[in-house]
Length: 173
Length: 173
Image 1: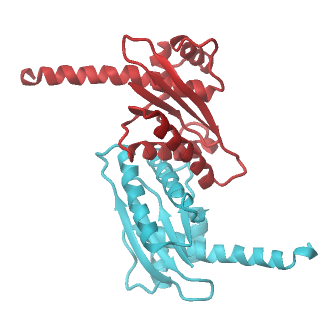
Image 2: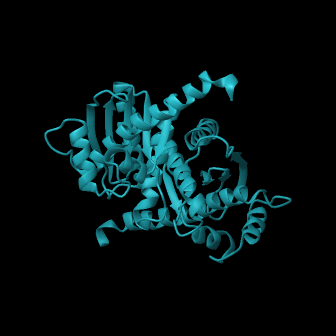
Image 3: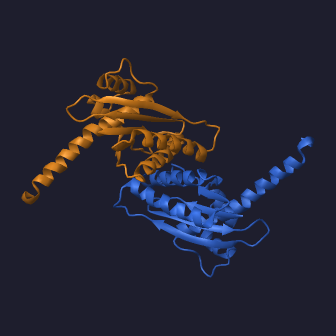
């Protein structure tokens, strides 16, 4: 499956697509960070992010989109822009029928490093290992987007297996 | 000018269109509250809000959209959904070239009631007075959306006059 991970943000929004399945090697398809100017209005910055995402969805046709679940306890000044960008990203995917999943930062860290409290450098290192890259993707938003995609491939597959097992044992429940 | 006010929210999103200009009577064009089910995913709820907003923009062709500026110091559980809905609303307007303005709750309250700390009932009362309605629009999201539109008509016109005056005195600056 091909998963597009999105690390939402107004100033820098990370897009990373990974192809893979549980028990098979993962492959980096493409990664990029969309930047918007702090001089522009919030509405026009969100438009830039949406337009770029539309191009990714048209061109790379992901099977699912994984977006970081945003919490409001962090930096008050940036969190609203992050939430707005995540909303725009979710709608762009959902209105064309692409399944959208949300994963928390600690779920993503735990998925790629085994530690829900891993730091940025550790996540970037593991992403480069798992995707067999010569060096960690930069900036951090790029490796966070890839980590989200990897997390979804592994967690999504796990929950799909559970659902399949439940369906197979349907009458036994 | 015709202004569409949007009180963003995931569970209830208020849309209210008002026509008017400074020094002229205001007229209610239309008001409604879009509701989405808490059982649905955030992505699909945002899609419902976007689709409804698209219909409003197609049908009523506002000259501007006024959205409530969201702050994160309020209810932590609902603020993220509010921010996501506001992002979706801003992009829907901006990508078709409709100017988007943000007004804070206290700017809106001050515009319609003269008091930046007015309560919900006072805002609803003043909205019904200013639009010559027989009773305050319900629920509060409806009257808040109309208050945003009124605020924008009055504040927008004021800033447009200032800009026109500056332009007229261009060489004198």
